Image (tube, rainbow, N blue to C red; front, side, top):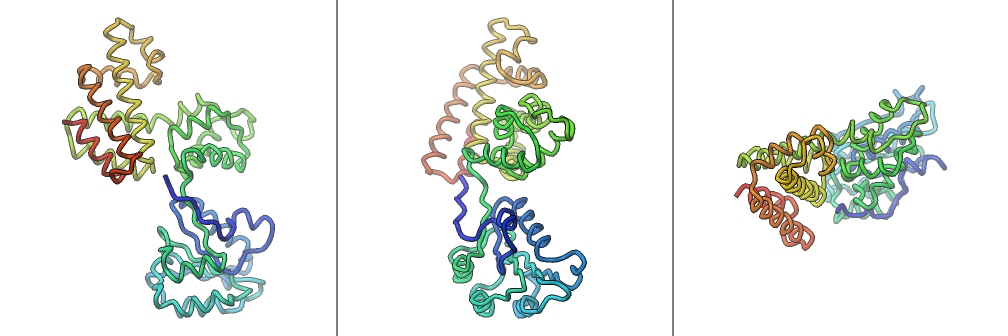
Length: 339
């Protein structure tokens, strides 16, 4: 699970509703959508549109010298109350050579909003980051846990003026895991689907129709590669789901486990003579998945599926027990399932 955000500066997206921006912010974290929203909110609050050309400077810390950044931070605004200085990839500011910035934090300009944005995360062990925390400037947008994610989805839906049934919230979390950016994009798509301003709540069926298909397709492709013993394709599919979809390894493991249980149910149902039209409802999968499940189930014996579920259980213990790094544990599982 992602680490909790250390409490320091208030999230500017919320704080700006109650007052003007502060003088310094250091933004980082896994949830880049939240970081981008915070930067946009700070710019809207700090820089009047009519004076933006005079009161907004943007630097990349890889390229700009710190002395030039600090000069901009100490420049008075023109035709406005404040100016904003944005520094991207700010984790590349040399923490050992940042004395000028450390001094600035002790007495920042009251007419400048200095926003330091890391491309990933700041190194929390450095003197510079500790000074940013002490100044109340550090805001880390950590990905929520699976337990926290439903509240994050509801909050996002409320902000968008959407009604979302509890079953739809659960379906979104099942499909997208702890990917807040993905959830926001999914809610935008669902909003268009139900009709803006229609007042109709988003249902679990809506989510199943529009959102979960991609995740299900990727699981099928992963298991296809495993069944074909194509190590390159299987590992590539695994890494794509872990990175591109931002799935937590435990959540992805749960999806793989569910899929193999569905294969076992499908095999048993076919042996019992259950007709194809009834199989989807019995197993609990959408109609598009039935033929693919039947095809994949034919590639496994009962013993093979039992061994696969045993390997998945062992991987679950390894992940929860911390005996293996999470990505490595999933890689090992994929290779075991092909053996």
